[in-house]
Amino acid sequence: MTRKFPADFLWGVATSAYQIEGGVDLDGRGPSIWDTFCAHPGAVRGGDDGRTAAEHRRRMASDVAMLAELGVGAYRFSVAWPRVRPLGRGAVSTAGLDFYRSLVDALLDAGVDPVVTLYHWDLPQALEDAGGWPARATAERFGEFASLVGAALGDRVRRWSTVNEPWCAAMLGYAGGIHAPGRSDPGAAIAAAHHLLLGHGLAVDALRATVRADAEVAITVNPYPVIAAGEREVDIDAARRVDGVANRLWYDLVLLGRYPDDVLADFATVSDLAHIRDGDLAMISRPIDAIGVNYYRRHHVRHAAGASAGPPASTWPGSPDVETVDPGVATTASRWAIEPDGLVETLVRLTRDYDPPPIYVHENGAAFDDHAGAGGDVDDADRLAFLRDHVRAAHDALAAGVDLRGYFVWSLLDNFEWAEGYAKRFGIVRVDFETQRRTPKASARWYAEVARTGEVD
Ligand code: IFM
Image (cartoon, rainbow, N blue to C red):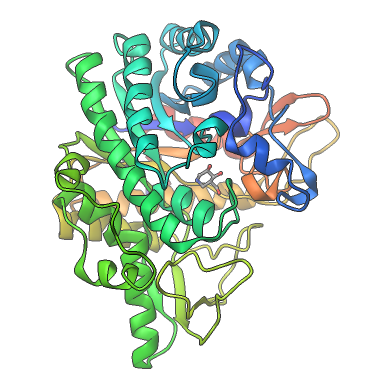
């Protein structure tokens, strides 16, 4: 059976600055928290870092030409804050802004719609030194950064996302210590979550003041179905807690302007919540035009006393007795369960419970252990099947009444997969990190056809 998507459905691919750009010494770029984190022995697998990555900073023109050849409608990328404002405040790098101006121009010339994400985790180190996201001032600096980028690109860029996956930035970075800046302080993580969203609200206002009137301003979250792996009351409660921190926290704040009561009660066990000020919720819930959903897998969880006492510390602040359980299905190379129906559930739940603005899948994809043939060719049948099943799920969601407007593959290129370094390849285009040669994989050819026809078998 062939499933046909609406003619104006947006087919895209996504990347982020630190994961592909390299060129950390160009444009007067300042250090980011990821440069610092990578330098800590043992923080990143293999001691890898983003100094070179996929050299996109130098190879932007040919990468855009490749995108044009793929024929996708849109390209979602992020702007590196330390490349544009090296210390996060004060002096602005004209060369940094010029890089993103040329990227946008090249995309528009190639007929590819740019989708700009303002924050994909590369906080200027100077702002971390001043307190990082747990400090309110960081949200204010982020609002200024949004104005700067809005003023530079806003006449040409229509699609914006403020913050990518604030759960990861707050909880992996400040609670679990697994991502930069590598802190393990649940109270700090809870404050970071609040300030990331406050920064989002400030950025919405800043963009509205600087970019074209028909702009579509969004935030990108990473929700998922949480399944209780057990029938005990404590297992059901573990699922409630994880659902609260993974899903309802972000949806309720951004779309309803309130904290879920149960999440606040869990948080109150490890935080005095003094960072929440009058007026914040109104700022956080500024109307948005779209919402981005990044989907990779369901989470199966149960209660286990002391399970996540660490190290690494719990990424569910206020809920230390939760463990994740392997559901026993096929997994990707990241050992993430492959469960495409979870995408339908995620989109239907968001639609049912929140009456959201139009939705985009801003990321979906998988790492697999690719094997390159002699010419660099990769027959990545496993990734192709993963993408096909999730595109089908996106169609099922449309059929169920979800206002889904587009789908973006994570990722265009093999890249720096954070704490996993270069060991996990998510690209539909292979990057040989020795030579920087790019070779579209079988999944790229398949996806190009989906984007061209708007159909999936
Ligand atoms: O690589 C990341 C990306 O930066 C954010 N979303 C999930 C991807 C895969 O882990």
